[in-house]
Image 1 (cartoon, rainbow, N blue to C red):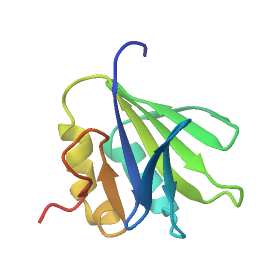
Image 2 (image 1 turned 180 degrees about the vertical axis):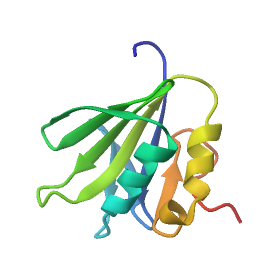
Image 3 (image 1 turned 135 degrees about the vertical axis):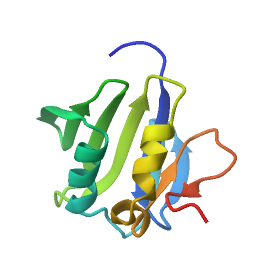
Image 4 (image 1 turned 120 degrees about the vertical axis):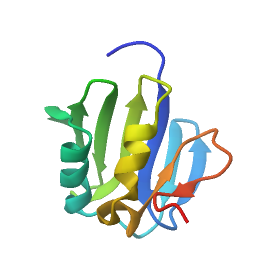
Length: 119
């Protein structure tokens, strides 16, 4: 997949968000559970491509999902490249309690970082 995309992230609730020299950085002691990765793979219908430098890459029909691990092999965040203007599938997946109870969806440039669970 090449071309223009919109970035999105799933991060632990409460993580700080800072745009640094190398892109978005998220700080906090929380980590995402393996259950979230497994759920998103099924819900977004993405396929494993490869693993490299602490990152697992998955690809679907309109998005790429990168699972980013820390030095202890725990999930720091999940980065998405969405290659269409439709965030519906991703937003819908975030409504599930598997994700919404532990994480928030952050879309840079959106008005605010919305928790995955809509209130």
